[in-house]
Length: 284
Image (cartoon, rainbow, N blue to C red; front, side):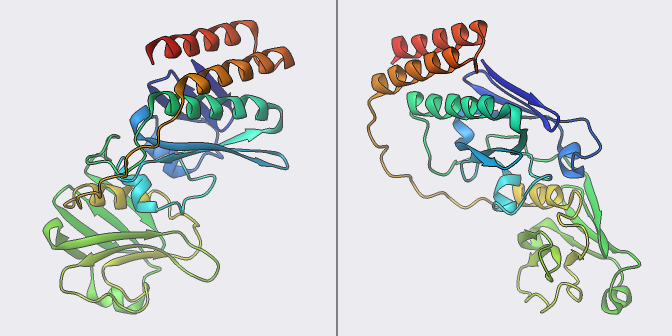
């Protein structure tokens, strides 16, 4: 088992599941607090990297397309501190973070986990009813209907039109974008047969914000709606490339020994990791 616990949260990997728990501090973003603990099965993982930085770095998880509605709808646009699949790592824990990323990557290699799109969601979709407020309005979704109610920041066009409500069956798609530079952040619903307004401030199917970079928990509303729309049939992935599993396991055992000698891994951590890799070698 591999584990890393830092103020931003904890990640625990047992070879089959990755358990992600957000930190409890005030600096943890609202979206992550609302989402809470996430359990990611191995087959949902597309990759993992450690991204070094001057003061430490980030562990970053990439999921397979179609495995998680939230991951799909934000399309890589969530950054720290809002991204639940990114963990801020302080400088004194970078060695452990690199080992953690290697452990997941080697497990993916050993078990030759598919990298292509998933036919169905492998992570739970957000529960309904769900709502979130940002900028000029609040979006509500009960599983069957979407309702938008405007705040005092709404444009004259939205105030005059009043609250908007439409059934899920009328939704052709949902788009979510963070605030960036001079551009507004948006939660926009595309309605069948309708062309969207030119600006989000005037679009009656759109909640927009200009201050909050990630619009609170609006991405979770987007994911809840996106998950309940008809899914496109994923393209079949290409045949997997053949890898020498034994060489990969033996290489990893050598790396574990080096980490143990350098003091990154304790005796207990080294023994547990070594036994896990030996079992995988025997099973392959």
